[in-house]
Image 1 (cartoon, rainbow, N blue to C red):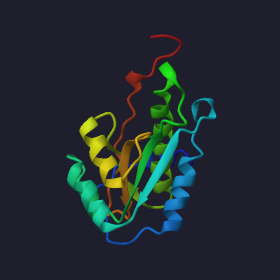
Image 2: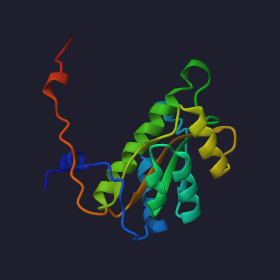
Image 3: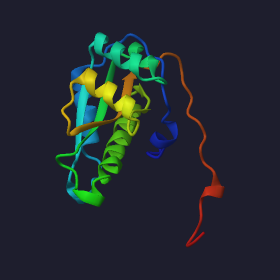
Amino acid sequence: MDPFNIFYQRKSVRKFTEENVSRETLTQLIRAAMAAPTAGNKQPWAFVAVDAPEVLARLGAVLPYAGFVKGAPAAIVVCGDLSKAFDGVEEPFWVQDCSAATQNILLACEMKGLGAVWTGVYPLQERMDAVSDILNLPDHIVPLNVIPLGTPSGTPKPKEKWAPENLHWQAW
């Protein structure tokens, strides 16, 4: 099998079966996240694994476009740890680092036959505050996104996103 297929087969999954996701699997996914590239090797990330239905329900209730979180068997909240981030003008690199970690989680889910979707939290203050309150995050931890995940319900199809007009060689 062509290893590039993992990229082409990745899809956003919003409906899940009731099958649990083990803590071993959640740990494996987060370990994959921590293998992501990071500016200056700062590793300004932190993760909250959630498998308690009551916490998933609360997260689903406060995320306006992610109510389906309450139907997922698990979620990973990817956060930036500002105590590990660069200072000053370079501080926002934590967003890029945590986004790379997020993509690793999404691809690892695909490899394991799990479905997942990136649901945005940062930079919307209302969402950040709500997720922080539910998870009791300290002030230096900023939630970037919530990734609900589990065994897909049905057979979701990936979208074809190749657009050759977006490729330029040497210059615009």
